Length: 306
Image 1 (cartoon, one colour):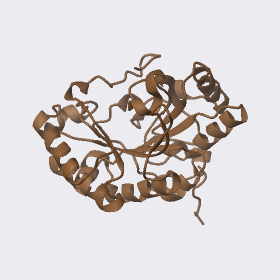
Image 2: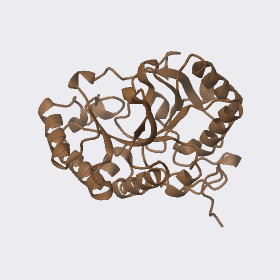
Image 3: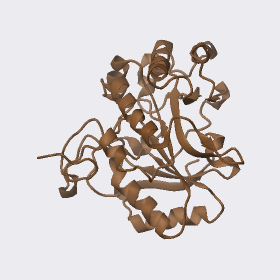
């Protein structure tokens, strides 16, 4: 009977629900066994300023992703074909690297593409607490995590930072091989909201302590997808939800070979989505300048990707 919520023995961490035993080397859609594979533990100042302030966030970048978006900016490490040999590590090594960065005054630790590693995320945070560290913890995900798996992180994550990529099921299938993405991602975000709340709590310096921030990346030629995504979020959570509406799309990975994705965003496309967001009454969050295109693209071939 395969009824596990959050382990590698019967993996149902994401909505692909492969149900395989990754501990014996069987790999799911993410092409991962039960090992810990981390491309980089590094200081990152490219997140929303309220997350880390001037000092930035200590981000843990995991290898391989449960979604395989054709336009992924982290494709060097997120693609199922990426080499895991150099990324093989131990829990102790990751914790040590995080502590070294926290000792410089950094206040927050972010976990990027963490879904296939949920048990490790909890173990890392527990190990930090045992060592006397209490950073703000940020879970940066594509929102294809199952609610049951996310429940394993209750009490460990302070800030959920999910993408809501698609309002269109057809685009979810075409670009990420996830045809039920719009519905499933709402289920995932609902569990995040249940744990940490819909509204963001800030400290005296204006930095985030707790809450949910939903990111949406506007894609070229797909304004209607963004309108549908925003409408879905409004319908499910109301207009007090905090949004980060991103214009930084860059045609990376396989996107350059797809005609409708092979260019950057036009100002009129982005402005149309911004206007629609405001028409729904959303007031909490951030918009981006179009000049951000290419600015946040990492290079994981370097020891410092950003």
